[in-house]
Amino acid sequence: MTRAFALLLLNCCLMPANAQDSPDTIPVPEETMQKLVIHKVKPLVQRDGEMRIQGTVVLNAIISNAGTIESLQMVSGHPMLVGAALGAVRQWRYRPYKVNGIPKAVETTIRVEFLKEEAETTAAEEESPVQGTADVMPGRLIYRVGPIYPPLARQARIQGTVILRIIINKLGEVRDTQVVSGHPMLSPAAVDAVKKWRYMPYESEGGTSEIETEVQVIFTLAGS
Image (tube, rainbow, N blue to C red; front, top):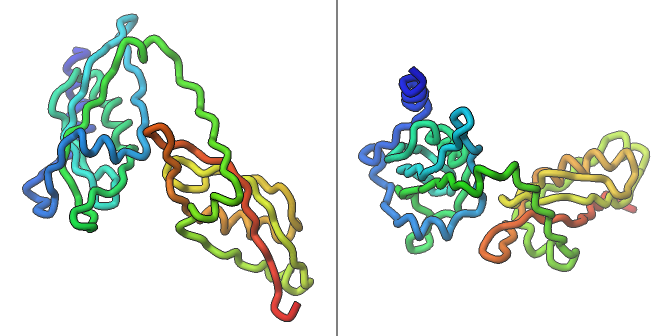
């Protein structure tokens, strides 16, 4: 009964991957795509009663030219592990695979391992962000949005600089902001703008890390 229910859930969770319907998709070896991973989510450990299930789930994946998972299909693996593998891999992100400088959608294999060591541990502690210095971070900024000047602050001729402490996630997105200093009528506009900024992912020791740094948003009025 339990196995039949698991198989039913498995059939409902799978995302179809039809290579024939994607003529622009090119096959790429698993080893090559592993080097392009910039964000990887570990699967939640599964257990059946008191028995911890181990093994490897093999998936066939279509990865878009933007580096996001487009579709997944199971190749092999324990039915009780497949759901967790699918849920984790859907969140993975890659640097685009390029041919002659042009990003391409690819078809590849992804293996998700459920090991004994992982099964015996609790959730891993969050990695501490790398401290980004003010002289390096401007060169890593690839997309910047200017703040919208608050109308009331403009009428009151309020100017100044808002300093924010931010955390940049492994995808280069600003995931957290904290006001360090600045006029309270200007700070919300600064936060709204900085949340839209994008940075180059920070790579260290073969992986990617979050970055913590400070940024300044300057508000000036014409004629001042």
